[in-house]
Length: 292
Length: 320
Image (cartoon, chains in turn cyan, green):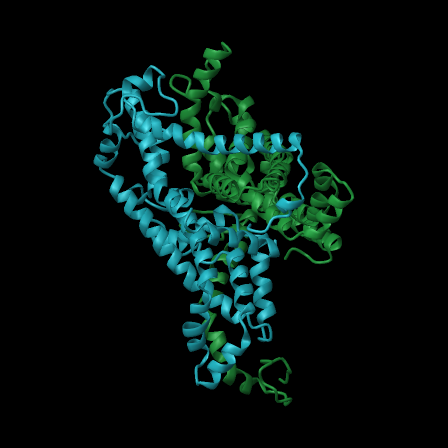
């Protein structure tokens, strides 16, 4: 969003509009940040300060007990391991499958392309509901294995369309030259198209990564509790079906600090990555907007 | 089988036979073989699986049921006779429409006002911060929400009781607060993000228009109402139509997380209703759940195709 509709030189001063803008923007910033600060403050505060409602946006009675409890929690690292596996494995599978489908579909002259495209687009509008999907996955004996998470979401139609339009925008001269040099289509895809498409692949890869990282519903219905990723662990801690603070009546306040710590530790990687890849994420949004 | 469709790089004008064509392009088909099979298996087999809505299911006998239901529409009649279904149906519609009424215009207002900012630093900062909530899981959003609303230690209750003297309430349990909280969290998560689309539309507006308006003495308010908004109107229309197409698909995730036994009257939607009938039940009623899902999916399909048709008429090109 570098270019803007307004250039500095020709602006009239307009106090009402400027105030309104400043007000709305400030409010939005405060609202966006406050919940994070609140959780941050809770996670580092002492139990007494929390029960006495002293904590708001800054830790009171600073201590790291909550984090030590989380890191000592028996299933925490296992859950984190599964999250990493789903996020990296799922993204890798998804990028491979999406590229393999997008490349042939980017050749508009290819016979049968229209049929496949129609098949893809129709499946965006209508799908088997939750139960047929569940029965398929369990019928394939995938439930209780990590493949139940990694495979069914391998191709997202929106990302596929983004990649197709990126592939078709690549100059055809490059491929021509490659053909003359004796490369076949496998070679062109592998050595030329994919390396040239790093921006698009980064974009859809990041979206897929965030999807898998934040996913909890499908692990809930497809996996055993010993395979739950960290988001599902968090949900169970928050709604009380898994207790984070060794179950004793240590006090409710500590568990609030512990929940806050889990919230932060589980979201941290994504929150740290996204500012650096902001451009890639935004590109996905504007590319997607061209199509829809 | 003679066709003329072929690689435009090939400048010869001879028609190619099927065998010749495949000889030259088989690799492209080979490349997409696995993903196409994947599509058929994971998108189209479940679609056929919807037939379960008309068939009786027996555990461990496969996903398509054992025999036709008698009468065929038995499961449809069954759920349509249940008040719980209609409650879920109404809730789905009300939540969707209210959410649309609030969270559709809000990003537009945000984008238009954001565009009035000239400081590059401020713009960058506000964008980075306003995207942040989009990247966290719904689990995290609802966890934070429930902590902030906690009657004993939450900041919201503390503030309201100390400043305004209001009683401490656990808002997540109250049916009356379910929709406002649903809409607010959506606003919190997606405003900055959705605004990207409008901002990129605004970035495409010709600068000359603003200059000409300035020469004619138009105030910036007038520039907003006579240039900015009319220029992004096509984008706004397309987004509106897309949103209307998705009216019936709220998704399980957030509602399931926000649902408590006491707020069911307001929070039960079709997706969670299906979940409770089937996967979340101790004795799953798969056929009945599939019937509800199919009913919902069909309404969704009609809405999406209708919306797309309107979009095509308005903008000259469909969304898909």
